[in-house]
Length: 86
Image (cartoon, rainbow, N blue to C red; front, side, top):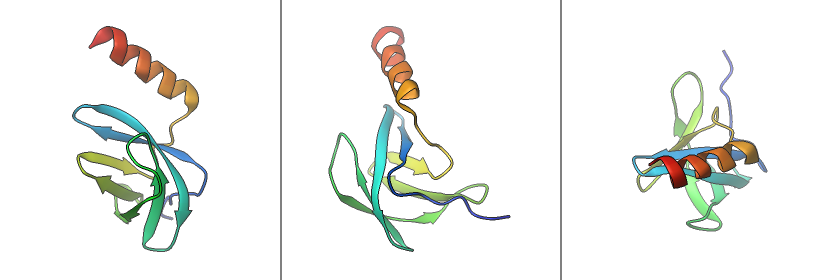
């Protein structure tokens, strides 16, 4: 089974105990990706193995894997839920 990899230009869902965030891959090598997010621009993260043949990264308390792409519609829905239901 082939490993799902992070792709340049795609946005992925970062999760934490405090919520979700969008991270966009702007550059990659075999061992690292550089991301843009609301927290930081052009941040380098080391790629590691995730579950079920995925790549994964972690940053502070945030975790993201290469399977969890994050559409604009999903981001809006998560924001609305966080604003009105938490």
